Image (tube, rainbow, N blue to C red):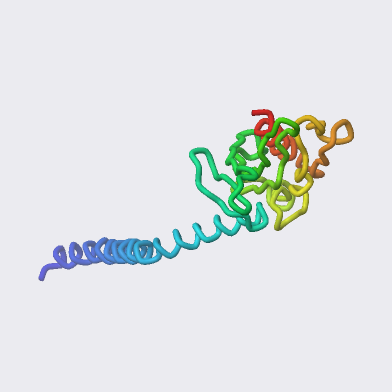
Length: 180
């Protein structure tokens, strides 16, 4: 073997070793994704079902075109509607809003609200999550007519200190759903 061939072989090995390592890692990653995908999807469904049931205190749910219908003892008492606002400080905020049904004597009222996805600032804007703060619970029982949907001190909704844009985005989104 000549020196030139030895140099070429050494160069080839320098390229081949990382390439084989990268391909092995890619294969292992793809294989891991494939075998865990069903478990992840199952866990996501169970989490979503748990959140939905918590929102309506264990009432029965039935999927509808736009969200979920809520039943208690076979009688529909409300709906859960998904809503997305792009007016958050860091972009989109996805909400689930549980509402009573509108009747001839009463407006729809909020049963509960949950944030299911956001990119708000940790430690400030993430106070919209019920696990971080009780802020989101202030909407329960409110309706379009009996609530001033502006932030306090002028309105009826308390803002999150340091997260006014986030507070305003969630409040406006809920008010929009109630006015539909």
